[in-house]
Amino acid sequence: MQTAFQLHPIIFFSSRKNSIKSDGWMKLGGWNSSRLGVTARGQSLRFLAPIHKTRLFVISNTDDGHQYAPVLEEDNNTNHAPCSEPETFFSKWSPPRYLWRGLSVLVLAGQVIIRTLKGKVHWKNTLQQLERVGPKSVGVCLLTSAFVGMAFTIQFVREFTRLGLNRSVGGVLALAFSRELSPVVTSVVVAGRIGSAFAAELGTMQVSEQTDTLRVLGSNPVDYLVTPRVIASSLALPFLTLMCFTMGMASSALLADGVYGISINIILDSAQRALQSWDIISAMIKSQVFGMIISIVSCAWGVTTMGGAKGVGESTTSAVVISLVGIFMADFALSYCFFQGAGDSLKNCV
Image (cartoon, rainbow, N blue to C red; front, side, top):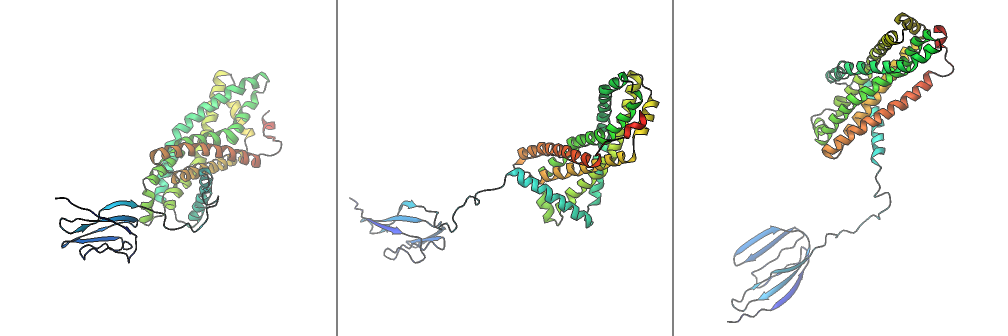
């Protein structure tokens, strides 16, 4: 028995009104409702379908007199909606990452100042961060300051001895440590130890969406995470600087006495004559500013981390580098403001 087929091409569009009926036994529903219904021989089948254009062929089968409509080809067109706005250069432009990260530092600093003035500070977390920045950083800061002081002493004490300026050694050491070496060295050590930890912690919390969890729980991430770290760094750095100044002077005096034969009493008397109260105050102001720079930059780089574990590593490294650059720039600006004109601090110890 031979079977004869007849092809009847039909174009079916996605419209609510369009349907195909063949002898009352097959029906294709409109696709605007995203539902396609087929009823055949008392059985029904319904399924969801996207909006697209389909070409159907109705094939007549002379054996049983029924017809079926297989789908032979489909034309998908997802661009149904025309572009309402013309594309411009600024529609595809996005600011560089370093630019909006720099702006985030300023925004975060403003938020910290405002929230602190309003008294919205998480004091328990602040005490924990203060212990972390202060007592747990004393050892490495003192060790670094001792060796920096001894290295600085070797560089110029023998030159002063050759010129007969033994009584000026203590004054030069005191001025160098109080005005420059102690604040900068302490801040560099803290930036490497604490700043990197701040950036890594907040970056991990950001990529793991823990900061979003804090918002859901009703806590402000700035109050709970950023402000305690900024306050702790600003309070701990001045005391660390004073301790480093004492350690640097002690190590330099011991080295000068043991190697170059300059008495410790001469060095201490010269330092007392050269030092003024403003030298110590300026060192504390510098270290406090440096602490704010380290904490704000590290926290800003942490909360803007993207890209998983790789992004956390990049943010940590970048935060330390930017913090060091900010420290040196702030050191120049503050030194220019604090110490202008010719100095006369050493005239009393010559």
